[in-house]
Image 1: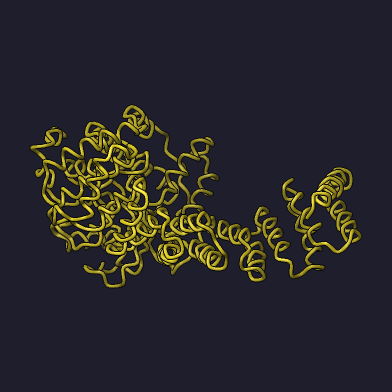
Image 2: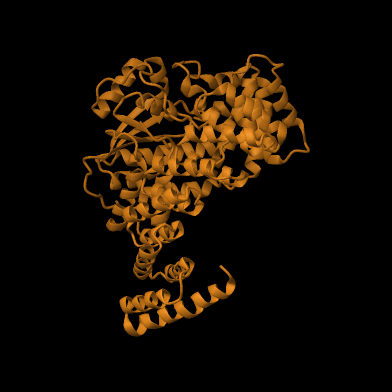
Length: 542
Protein backbone atom coordinates (compact mmCIF):
# COMPACT_ATOMS: atom_id res chain seq x y z
CA UNK A 1 0.00 0.00 0.00
CA UNK A 2 1.61 3.26 -1.05
CA UNK A 3 1.69 6.28 1.21
CA UNK A 4 -0.72 8.30 -0.97
CA UNK A 5 -3.54 5.79 -0.48
CA UNK A 6 -2.70 5.51 3.23
CA UNK A 7 -2.93 9.31 3.63
CA UNK A 8 -6.21 9.38 1.71
CA UNK A 9 -7.72 6.64 3.76
CA UNK A 10 -6.71 7.83 7.18
CA UNK A 11 -6.79 11.59 6.62
CA UNK A 12 -10.00 11.85 4.61
CA UNK A 13 -12.25 8.86 5.21
CA UNK A 14 -11.32 8.33 8.84
CA UNK A 15 -11.48 12.03 9.72
CA UNK A 16 -14.88 12.25 8.06
CA UNK A 17 -16.02 9.27 10.11
CA UNK A 18 -14.81 10.87 13.33
CA UNK A 19 -16.61 14.08 12.45
CA UNK A 20 -19.83 12.29 11.56
CA UNK A 21 -19.74 10.32 14.83
CA UNK A 22 -20.11 13.61 16.68
CA UNK A 23 -22.97 14.90 14.54
CA UNK A 24 -24.84 11.82 13.32
CA UNK A 25 -23.89 9.02 15.71
CA UNK A 26 -21.71 5.95 15.21
CA UNK A 27 -24.19 3.84 13.20
CA UNK A 28 -24.84 6.55 10.63
CA UNK A 29 -21.17 7.46 10.46
CA UNK A 30 -20.02 3.91 9.72
CA UNK A 31 -22.77 3.49 7.12
CA UNK A 32 -21.43 6.54 5.28
CA UNK A 33 -17.89 5.14 5.41
CA UNK A 34 -19.06 1.79 4.01
CA UNK A 35 -20.83 3.58 1.15
CA UNK A 36 -17.75 5.67 0.44
CA UNK A 37 -15.45 2.63 0.41
CA UNK A 38 -17.85 0.69 -1.83
CA UNK A 39 -17.57 3.54 -4.31
CA UNK A 40 -13.79 3.90 -4.02
CA UNK A 41 -12.81 0.83 -6.02
CA UNK A 42 -11.93 -2.80 -5.45
CA UNK A 43 -9.19 -2.69 -2.81
CA UNK A 44 -9.61 -4.58 0.50
CA UNK A 45 -6.61 -2.73 1.92
CA UNK A 46 -8.61 0.51 1.97
CA UNK A 47 -11.19 -1.15 4.21
CA UNK A 48 -8.50 -2.58 6.44
CA UNK A 49 -6.71 0.75 6.91
CA UNK A 50 -9.89 2.56 7.91
CA UNK A 51 -10.76 -0.25 10.32
CA UNK A 52 -7.29 -0.01 11.84
CA UNK A 53 -7.85 3.70 12.43
CA UNK A 54 -11.22 3.06 14.06
CA UNK A 55 -9.70 0.45 16.35
CA UNK A 56 -6.88 2.84 17.21
CA UNK A 57 -9.49 5.40 18.28
CA UNK A 58 -11.37 2.67 20.20
CA UNK A 59 -14.43 2.70 17.96
CA UNK A 60 -14.63 -1.06 18.21
CA UNK A 61 -18.23 -1.75 17.26
CA UNK A 62 -18.09 0.52 14.15
CA UNK A 63 -14.82 -1.17 13.16
CA UNK A 64 -16.52 -4.56 13.48
CA UNK A 65 -19.44 -3.42 11.34
CA UNK A 66 -17.04 -2.05 8.74
CA UNK A 67 -15.10 -5.32 8.63
CA UNK A 68 -18.35 -7.31 8.44
CA UNK A 69 -19.18 -5.37 5.29
CA UNK A 70 -15.66 -5.80 3.94
CA UNK A 71 -15.78 -9.56 4.44
CA UNK A 72 -19.02 -9.77 2.48
CA UNK A 73 -16.98 -8.55 -0.48
CA UNK A 74 -13.61 -10.11 0.30
CA UNK A 75 -14.27 -13.38 2.11
CA UNK A 76 -10.84 -14.89 1.69
CA UNK A 77 -8.62 -12.03 2.87
CA UNK A 78 -6.89 -13.23 6.08
CA UNK A 79 -5.89 -9.74 7.21
CA UNK A 80 -9.55 -8.65 7.35
CA UNK A 81 -10.37 -11.57 9.63
CA UNK A 82 -7.31 -10.72 11.71
CA UNK A 83 -8.41 -7.12 12.24
CA UNK A 84 -12.00 -8.09 12.96
CA UNK A 85 -10.61 -10.53 15.51
CA UNK A 86 -8.73 -7.68 17.16
CA UNK A 87 -11.84 -5.48 17.24
CA UNK A 88 -13.87 -8.30 18.78
CA UNK A 89 -11.14 -9.16 21.28
CA UNK A 90 -10.85 -5.58 22.49
CA UNK A 91 -14.64 -5.42 22.74
CA UNK A 92 -14.71 -8.42 25.10
CA UNK A 93 -16.03 -10.90 22.55
CA UNK A 94 -13.32 -13.51 22.93
CA UNK A 95 -15.12 -16.49 21.39
CA UNK A 96 -15.98 -14.56 18.22
CA UNK A 97 -12.46 -13.14 18.07
CA UNK A 98 -10.98 -16.63 18.32
CA UNK A 99 -13.06 -17.75 15.34
CA UNK A 100 -11.74 -14.89 13.20
CA UNK A 101 -8.14 -15.42 14.23
CA UNK A 102 -8.42 -19.11 13.39
CA UNK A 103 -9.94 -18.35 9.98
CA UNK A 104 -7.03 -15.99 9.28
CA UNK A 105 -4.57 -18.73 10.24
CA UNK A 106 -6.42 -21.34 8.22
CA UNK A 107 -6.17 -19.15 5.13
CA UNK A 108 -2.61 -18.06 5.92
CA UNK A 109 -0.84 -20.39 8.41
CA UNK A 110 2.14 -18.05 8.40
CA UNK A 111 0.16 -15.02 9.63
CA UNK A 112 2.37 -14.21 12.61
CA UNK A 113 0.24 -11.38 14.01
CA UNK A 114 -2.91 -13.51 14.02
CA UNK A 115 -1.06 -16.29 15.80
CA UNK A 116 0.30 -13.92 18.44
CA UNK A 117 -3.04 -12.19 19.04
CA UNK A 118 -4.82 -15.52 19.38
CA UNK A 119 -2.15 -17.03 21.60
CA UNK A 120 -2.00 -14.09 24.00
CA UNK A 121 -5.80 -13.99 24.21
CA UNK A 122 -5.96 -17.70 24.96
CA UNK A 123 -3.22 -17.47 27.57
CA UNK A 124 -4.93 -14.54 29.28
CA UNK A 125 -8.10 -16.62 29.64
CA UNK A 126 -6.19 -19.55 31.14
CA UNK A 127 -6.17 -21.72 28.01
CA UNK A 128 -2.43 -22.16 28.16
CA UNK A 129 -2.19 -25.39 26.24
CA UNK A 130 -4.31 -24.08 23.37
CA UNK A 131 -2.12 -20.97 23.32
CA UNK A 132 1.00 -23.11 23.20
CA UNK A 133 -0.40 -25.12 20.29
CA UNK A 134 -0.95 -21.92 18.32
CA UNK A 135 2.60 -20.69 18.88
CA UNK A 136 4.15 -24.08 18.14
CA UNK A 137 2.17 -24.35 14.90
CA UNK A 138 3.08 -20.79 13.95
CA UNK A 139 6.77 -21.57 14.40
CA UNK A 140 6.46 -24.67 12.24
CA UNK A 141 4.61 -22.76 9.50
CA UNK A 142 6.99 -19.82 9.28
CA UNK A 143 10.58 -19.33 8.23
CA UNK A 144 11.26 -18.13 11.77
CA UNK A 145 14.54 -16.43 12.58
CA UNK A 146 16.52 -16.72 15.81
CA UNK A 147 14.73 -13.83 17.54
CA UNK A 148 11.31 -15.29 16.72
CA UNK A 149 12.43 -18.70 17.88
CA UNK A 150 13.66 -17.36 21.22
CA UNK A 151 10.37 -15.49 21.70
CA UNK A 152 8.37 -18.61 20.85
CA UNK A 153 10.36 -20.70 23.32
CA UNK A 154 9.89 -18.12 26.06
CA UNK A 155 6.13 -18.07 25.45
CA UNK A 156 5.87 -21.86 25.50
CA UNK A 157 7.85 -22.08 28.73
CA UNK A 158 5.60 -19.48 30.36
CA UNK A 159 2.66 -21.70 29.38
CA UNK A 160 4.31 -24.74 30.94
CA UNK A 161 4.45 -26.37 27.50
CA UNK A 162 7.97 -27.68 27.97
CA UNK A 163 7.62 -30.74 25.73
CA UNK A 164 6.72 -28.86 22.51
CA UNK A 165 9.23 -26.19 23.50
CA UNK A 166 11.92 -28.83 23.85
CA UNK A 167 11.07 -30.19 20.39
CA UNK A 168 11.37 -26.73 18.86
CA UNK A 169 14.60 -26.04 20.76
CA UNK A 170 16.14 -29.27 19.50
CA UNK A 171 15.14 -28.44 15.93
CA UNK A 172 16.52 -24.93 16.38
CA UNK A 173 19.81 -26.33 17.65
CA UNK A 174 20.11 -28.24 14.40
CA UNK A 175 19.30 -25.14 12.39
CA UNK A 176 21.56 -22.77 14.33
CA UNK A 177 24.23 -24.96 15.97
CA UNK A 178 26.42 -21.97 16.78
CA UNK A 179 23.79 -20.00 18.71
CA UNK A 180 24.49 -20.12 22.47
CA UNK A 181 21.08 -18.75 23.54
CA UNK A 182 19.22 -21.53 21.78
CA UNK A 183 21.59 -24.13 23.20
CA UNK A 184 21.06 -22.67 26.67
CA UNK A 185 17.27 -22.86 26.34
CA UNK A 186 17.45 -26.40 24.98
CA UNK A 187 19.46 -27.39 28.04
CA UNK A 188 17.10 -25.61 30.41
CA UNK A 189 14.13 -27.44 28.89
CA UNK A 190 15.80 -30.84 29.01
CA UNK A 191 16.74 -30.21 32.63
CA UNK A 192 13.18 -29.24 33.61
CA UNK A 193 11.94 -32.46 31.98
CA UNK A 194 14.47 -34.59 33.86
CA UNK A 195 16.57 -35.39 30.78
CA UNK A 196 19.83 -34.79 32.59
CA UNK A 197 22.26 -36.22 30.03
CA UNK A 198 20.72 -34.30 27.13
CA UNK A 199 20.63 -31.16 29.28
CA UNK A 200 24.33 -31.49 30.05
CA UNK A 201 25.20 -31.74 26.35
CA UNK A 202 23.21 -28.63 25.44
CA UNK A 203 24.33 -26.56 28.43
CA UNK A 204 27.94 -27.54 27.91
CA UNK A 205 27.64 -26.41 24.32
CA UNK A 206 26.07 -23.11 25.42
CA UNK A 207 28.92 -22.15 27.75
CA UNK A 208 31.55 -23.25 25.23
CA UNK A 209 29.95 -21.06 22.56
CA UNK A 210 29.51 -18.16 25.00
CA UNK A 211 30.92 -18.30 28.55
CA UNK A 212 28.66 -15.36 29.45
CA UNK A 213 25.57 -17.58 29.36
CA UNK A 214 25.64 -17.15 33.12
CA UNK A 215 22.62 -19.23 34.24
CA UNK A 216 23.84 -22.15 32.12
CA UNK A 217 26.74 -22.67 34.53
CA UNK A 218 24.28 -23.21 37.36
CA UNK A 219 22.07 -25.51 35.33
CA UNK A 220 25.06 -27.51 34.15
CA UNK A 221 25.93 -28.21 37.78
CA UNK A 222 22.37 -29.48 38.39
CA UNK A 223 22.70 -32.18 35.72
CA UNK A 224 24.52 -34.65 37.94
CA UNK A 225 25.76 -35.41 41.42
CA UNK A 226 29.54 -35.12 41.11
CA UNK A 227 31.71 -37.99 42.29
CA UNK A 228 35.03 -37.18 40.60
CA UNK A 229 37.10 -34.05 41.21
CA UNK A 230 38.54 -34.42 37.70
CA UNK A 231 35.13 -34.39 35.99
CA UNK A 232 35.45 -32.29 32.84
CA UNK A 233 32.33 -30.21 33.56
CA UNK A 234 33.52 -29.51 37.09
CA UNK A 235 36.88 -28.41 35.71
CA UNK A 236 35.11 -26.20 33.17
CA UNK A 237 33.00 -24.60 35.90
CA UNK A 238 36.05 -23.98 38.07
CA UNK A 239 37.85 -22.31 35.16
CA UNK A 240 34.91 -19.94 34.70
CA UNK A 241 34.95 -19.08 38.41
CA UNK A 242 38.65 -18.24 38.25
CA UNK A 243 38.35 -16.27 35.00
CA UNK A 244 38.34 -12.62 36.10
CA UNK A 245 37.71 -11.53 32.51
CA UNK A 246 34.13 -12.79 32.77
CA UNK A 247 31.35 -10.56 34.08
CA UNK A 248 30.59 -10.48 37.81
CA UNK A 249 27.19 -12.06 37.19
CA UNK A 250 28.69 -14.97 35.26
CA UNK A 251 31.42 -15.54 37.83
CA UNK A 252 28.80 -15.46 40.58
CA UNK A 253 26.77 -18.18 38.84
CA UNK A 254 29.94 -20.22 38.26
CA UNK A 255 30.84 -19.83 41.93
CA UNK A 256 27.52 -21.21 43.12
CA UNK A 257 27.83 -24.02 40.57
CA UNK A 258 31.31 -24.88 41.80
CA UNK A 259 30.18 -24.78 45.41
CA UNK A 260 27.42 -27.24 44.59
CA UNK A 261 29.86 -29.60 42.87
CA UNK A 262 32.30 -29.49 45.78
CA UNK A 263 29.45 -30.16 48.19
CA UNK A 264 28.60 -33.26 46.14
CA UNK A 265 32.20 -34.40 46.67
CA UNK A 266 32.06 -33.75 50.41
CA UNK A 267 34.70 -31.02 50.17
CA UNK A 268 32.87 -28.78 52.61
CA UNK A 269 35.85 -26.58 53.45
CA UNK A 270 36.47 -25.44 49.89
CA UNK A 271 32.75 -25.31 49.12
CA UNK A 272 32.29 -22.93 52.07
CA UNK A 273 35.11 -20.67 50.95
CA UNK A 274 33.92 -20.39 47.36
CA UNK A 275 30.27 -20.00 48.31
CA UNK A 276 31.13 -17.25 50.78
CA UNK A 277 32.81 -15.29 47.96
CA UNK A 278 29.97 -16.03 45.53
CA UNK A 279 27.37 -14.85 48.07
CA UNK A 280 29.34 -11.66 48.65
CA UNK A 281 29.28 -10.96 44.92
CA UNK A 282 25.56 -11.76 44.65
CA UNK A 283 24.73 -9.58 47.66
CA UNK A 284 26.52 -6.64 46.05
CA UNK A 285 24.08 -6.75 43.15
CA UNK A 286 20.95 -7.26 45.25
CA UNK A 287 18.47 -4.53 46.20
CA UNK A 288 17.19 -6.44 49.23
CA UNK A 289 16.69 -4.44 52.45
CA UNK A 290 15.78 -5.98 55.77
CA UNK A 291 13.93 -2.87 56.95
CA UNK A 292 11.53 -3.03 54.01
CA UNK A 293 10.76 -6.64 54.85
CA UNK A 294 10.09 -5.80 58.48
CA UNK A 295 7.79 -2.94 57.43
CA UNK A 296 5.86 -5.29 55.15
CA UNK A 297 5.39 -7.84 57.92
CA UNK A 298 4.18 -5.17 60.32
CA UNK A 299 1.73 -3.86 57.74
CA UNK A 300 0.31 -7.31 57.06
CA UNK A 301 -0.16 -8.06 60.72
CA UNK A 302 -1.80 -4.69 61.36
CA UNK A 303 -3.99 -4.68 58.25
CA UNK A 304 -7.77 -4.80 58.40
CA UNK A 305 -9.36 -8.12 57.34
CA UNK A 306 -10.18 -8.43 53.67
CA UNK A 307 -13.75 -9.04 52.51
CA UNK A 308 -14.20 -12.75 51.83
CA UNK A 309 -15.81 -13.86 48.61
CA UNK A 310 -18.40 -16.61 48.36
CA UNK A 311 -17.06 -20.12 48.46
CA UNK A 312 -16.49 -21.55 44.97
CA UNK A 313 -17.40 -25.18 45.49
CA UNK A 314 -16.13 -26.37 42.10
CA UNK A 315 -12.64 -24.93 42.49
CA UNK A 316 -10.31 -26.04 45.29
CA UNK A 317 -6.80 -24.57 45.18
CA UNK A 318 -3.90 -25.84 47.27
CA UNK A 319 -1.15 -23.44 48.26
CA UNK A 320 2.11 -24.94 49.49
CA UNK A 321 3.96 -22.26 51.44
CA UNK A 322 6.87 -21.73 53.77
CA UNK A 323 10.41 -20.52 53.57
CA UNK A 324 12.01 -21.65 50.30
CA UNK A 325 14.02 -24.89 50.50
CA UNK A 326 11.73 -26.41 53.14
CA UNK A 327 10.36 -29.19 50.91
CA UNK A 328 7.67 -27.36 48.94
CA UNK A 329 8.77 -28.89 45.62
CA UNK A 330 8.86 -32.36 47.18
CA UNK A 331 5.34 -32.01 48.59
CA UNK A 332 3.96 -30.72 45.29
CA UNK A 333 5.58 -33.64 43.46
CA UNK A 334 4.05 -36.12 45.91
CA UNK A 335 0.59 -34.59 45.61
CA UNK A 336 0.79 -34.68 41.81
CA UNK A 337 0.83 -38.48 41.97
CA UNK A 338 -2.87 -38.39 42.79
CA UNK A 339 -5.13 -38.33 39.71
CA UNK A 340 -7.33 -35.63 41.24
CA UNK A 341 -4.44 -33.18 41.70
CA UNK A 342 -2.74 -30.90 39.16
CA UNK A 343 0.58 -29.35 40.11
CA UNK A 344 0.99 -25.96 38.44
CA UNK A 345 4.44 -25.28 39.88
CA UNK A 346 5.48 -21.90 41.25
CA UNK A 347 3.01 -19.31 40.00
CA UNK A 348 3.53 -15.57 40.37
CA UNK A 349 -0.10 -14.57 39.98
CA UNK A 350 -0.83 -13.96 43.66
CA UNK A 351 2.15 -11.64 44.31
CA UNK A 352 1.42 -9.81 41.06
CA UNK A 353 -2.28 -9.41 41.82
CA UNK A 354 -1.57 -8.32 45.39
CA UNK A 355 0.77 -5.56 44.19
CA UNK A 356 -1.77 -4.51 41.57
CA UNK A 357 -4.60 -4.30 44.10
CA UNK A 358 -2.45 -2.28 46.49
CA UNK A 359 -1.32 0.09 43.74
CA UNK A 360 -4.94 0.67 42.67
CA UNK A 361 -6.14 0.98 46.29
CA UNK A 362 -8.55 -1.90 45.64
CA UNK A 363 -7.30 -4.42 48.19
CA UNK A 364 -10.56 -4.12 50.15
CA UNK A 365 -12.80 -3.79 47.08
CA UNK A 366 -14.96 -6.92 46.81
CA UNK A 367 -15.59 -6.39 43.10
CA UNK A 368 -11.88 -6.11 42.38
CA UNK A 369 -11.18 -9.19 44.49
CA UNK A 370 -13.81 -11.10 42.55
CA UNK A 371 -12.08 -10.17 39.29
CA UNK A 372 -8.72 -11.28 40.67
CA UNK A 373 -10.21 -14.57 41.87
CA UNK A 374 -11.44 -15.23 38.34
CA UNK A 375 -8.02 -14.50 36.86
CA UNK A 376 -6.12 -16.67 39.34
CA UNK A 377 -8.56 -19.58 39.10
CA UNK A 378 -8.44 -19.51 35.29
CA UNK A 379 -4.64 -19.60 35.36
CA UNK A 380 -4.68 -22.55 37.75
CA UNK A 381 -7.46 -24.53 36.05
CA UNK A 382 -6.05 -24.18 32.53
CA UNK A 383 -7.37 -26.29 29.69
CA UNK A 384 -6.05 -29.78 30.35
CA UNK A 385 -8.08 -32.56 31.95
CA UNK A 386 -10.11 -31.16 34.89
CA UNK A 387 -9.15 -32.04 38.44
CA UNK A 388 -10.43 -31.59 41.95
CA UNK A 389 -7.37 -29.77 43.29
CA UNK A 390 -4.89 -27.37 41.72
CA UNK A 391 -1.52 -26.70 43.35
CA UNK A 392 0.46 -23.46 43.47
CA UNK A 393 3.75 -24.20 45.22
CA UNK A 394 5.21 -20.72 45.32
CA UNK A 395 6.61 -20.84 48.87
CA UNK A 396 6.60 -17.06 49.28
CA UNK A 397 2.81 -17.02 49.12
CA UNK A 398 2.98 -17.25 52.91
CA UNK A 399 3.14 -13.46 52.66
CA UNK A 400 -0.40 -13.27 51.28
CA UNK A 401 -2.50 -15.86 53.09
CA UNK A 402 -5.04 -13.13 53.91
CA UNK A 403 -5.55 -12.54 50.19
CA UNK A 404 -5.66 -16.28 49.45
CA UNK A 405 -8.43 -16.95 51.95
CA UNK A 406 -10.36 -13.85 50.86
CA UNK A 407 -10.28 -15.02 47.23
CA UNK A 408 -10.78 -18.71 47.95
CA UNK A 409 -12.39 -19.44 51.33
CA UNK A 410 -12.08 -23.18 50.68
CA UNK A 411 -8.35 -23.06 49.88
CA UNK A 412 -6.14 -25.68 51.52
CA UNK A 413 -2.79 -24.41 52.77
CA UNK A 414 0.13 -26.73 53.40
CA UNK A 415 2.82 -25.04 55.46
CA UNK A 416 6.24 -26.65 55.11
CA UNK A 417 8.78 -26.31 57.90
CA UNK A 418 12.39 -27.41 58.31
CA UNK A 419 15.24 -26.94 60.75
CA UNK A 420 16.30 -23.33 60.23
CA UNK A 421 19.97 -24.27 60.05
CA UNK A 422 19.34 -26.70 57.20
CA UNK A 423 17.02 -24.19 55.52
CA UNK A 424 19.50 -21.33 55.86
CA UNK A 425 22.38 -23.39 54.51
CA UNK A 426 20.32 -24.59 51.55
CA UNK A 427 19.24 -21.03 50.75
CA UNK A 428 22.78 -19.68 51.11
CA UNK A 429 24.10 -22.34 48.72
CA UNK A 430 21.69 -21.39 45.91
CA UNK A 431 21.71 -18.55 43.44
CA UNK A 432 18.20 -17.20 42.85
CA UNK A 433 17.24 -14.94 39.97
CA UNK A 434 14.19 -13.32 41.59
CA UNK A 435 14.79 -10.15 43.60
CA UNK A 436 12.34 -11.33 46.28
CA UNK A 437 15.03 -13.87 47.23
CA UNK A 438 17.79 -11.33 47.60
CA UNK A 439 17.87 -12.07 51.33
CA UNK A 440 19.39 -15.51 50.72
CA UNK A 441 22.95 -14.21 50.25
CA UNK A 442 23.42 -13.22 53.89
CA UNK A 443 22.74 -15.31 57.00
CA UNK A 444 21.64 -12.25 58.99
CA UNK A 445 19.01 -11.42 56.36
CA UNK A 446 17.87 -15.05 56.24
CA UNK A 447 17.27 -14.88 59.99
CA UNK A 448 15.28 -11.66 59.64
CA UNK A 449 13.07 -13.18 56.95
CA UNK A 450 12.62 -16.33 59.05
CA UNK A 451 11.51 -14.22 62.00
CA UNK A 452 9.04 -12.34 59.80
CA UNK A 453 7.81 -15.63 58.38
CA UNK A 454 7.20 -16.99 61.87
CA UNK A 455 5.34 -13.84 62.94
CA UNK A 456 3.15 -13.92 59.85
CA UNK A 457 2.33 -17.60 60.17
CA UNK A 458 1.41 -17.14 63.83
CA UNK A 459 -0.86 -14.27 62.78
CA UNK A 460 -2.50 -16.29 59.99
CA UNK A 461 -3.00 -19.33 62.24
CA UNK A 462 -5.06 -17.14 64.58
CA UNK A 463 -7.59 -16.82 61.75
CA UNK A 464 -9.76 -19.87 62.22
CA UNK A 465 -11.08 -19.55 58.67
CA UNK A 466 -7.80 -20.84 57.28
CA UNK A 467 -7.37 -24.55 56.65
CA UNK A 468 -3.66 -25.05 57.35
CA UNK A 469 -1.73 -28.31 57.57
CA UNK A 470 1.70 -28.08 59.19
CA UNK A 471 4.22 -30.42 57.58
CA UNK A 472 7.75 -30.95 58.85
CA UNK A 473 10.42 -31.89 56.30
CA UNK A 474 12.32 -34.16 58.68
CA UNK A 475 9.15 -36.07 59.56
CA UNK A 476 8.20 -36.39 55.89
CA UNK A 477 11.45 -38.04 54.84
CA UNK A 478 11.74 -40.13 58.03
CA UNK A 479 8.18 -41.48 58.02
CA UNK A 480 6.77 -40.83 54.54
CA UNK A 481 3.88 -43.27 54.83
CA UNK A 482 2.39 -41.51 57.84
CA UNK A 483 2.96 -38.01 56.51
CA UNK A 484 1.58 -38.76 53.05
CA UNK A 485 -1.47 -40.24 54.75
CA UNK A 486 -1.86 -36.94 56.64
CA UNK A 487 -1.79 -35.12 53.30
CA UNK A 488 -4.48 -37.41 51.89
CA UNK A 489 -6.70 -36.94 54.94
CA UNK A 490 -6.24 -33.16 54.80
CA UNK A 491 -7.40 -33.13 51.19
CA UNK A 492 -10.09 -35.77 51.80
CA UNK A 493 -8.86 -37.97 48.96
CA UNK A 494 -8.00 -41.63 48.63
CA UNK A 495 -4.47 -42.68 49.45
CA UNK A 496 -1.74 -40.82 47.59
CA UNK A 497 0.51 -43.38 45.83
CA UNK A 498 3.84 -43.90 47.57
CA UNK A 499 5.55 -44.22 44.18
CA UNK A 500 4.97 -42.61 40.83
CA UNK A 501 1.99 -44.50 39.44
CA UNK A 502 1.74 -42.50 36.23
CA UNK A 503 4.45 -41.04 33.95
CA UNK A 504 5.98 -38.01 35.58
CA UNK A 505 4.43 -35.06 33.78
CA UNK A 506 5.43 -32.39 36.25
CA UNK A 507 7.95 -29.81 35.21
CA UNK A 508 10.61 -29.01 37.81
CA UNK A 509 12.34 -25.75 37.03
CA UNK A 510 13.58 -24.84 40.50
CA UNK A 511 16.91 -25.59 42.14
CA UNK A 512 15.29 -28.83 43.35
CA UNK A 513 15.27 -30.22 39.82
CA UNK A 514 17.54 -33.15 40.73
CA UNK A 515 16.29 -33.87 44.26
CA UNK A 516 12.61 -33.87 43.27
CA UNK A 517 13.19 -36.85 41.00
CA UNK A 518 15.09 -38.96 43.52
CA UNK A 519 13.59 -41.39 46.06
CA UNK A 520 12.90 -39.89 49.48
CA UNK A 521 16.12 -39.69 51.45
CA UNK A 522 17.11 -38.47 54.91
CA UNK A 523 20.69 -37.32 54.37
CA UNK A 524 19.58 -33.67 53.93
CA UNK A 525 18.36 -33.67 57.55
CA UNK A 526 21.07 -32.20 59.76
CA UNK A 527 23.15 -31.34 56.71
CA UNK A 528 24.21 -28.08 58.34
CA UNK A 529 26.51 -30.04 60.64
CA UNK A 530 28.84 -30.70 57.69
CA UNK A 531 29.46 -26.96 57.55
CA UNK A 532 29.43 -26.06 61.23
CA UNK A 533 33.23 -25.80 61.41
CA UNK A 534 33.40 -23.53 58.36
CA UNK A 535 30.27 -21.44 58.76
CA UNK A 536 30.03 -20.51 62.44
CA UNK A 537 26.97 -18.37 61.64
CA UNK A 538 24.92 -21.55 61.42
CA UNK A 539 25.40 -22.24 65.10
CA UNK A 540 23.97 -18.87 66.11
CA UNK A 541 20.73 -18.88 64.12
CA UNK A 542 18.56 -19.76 67.11
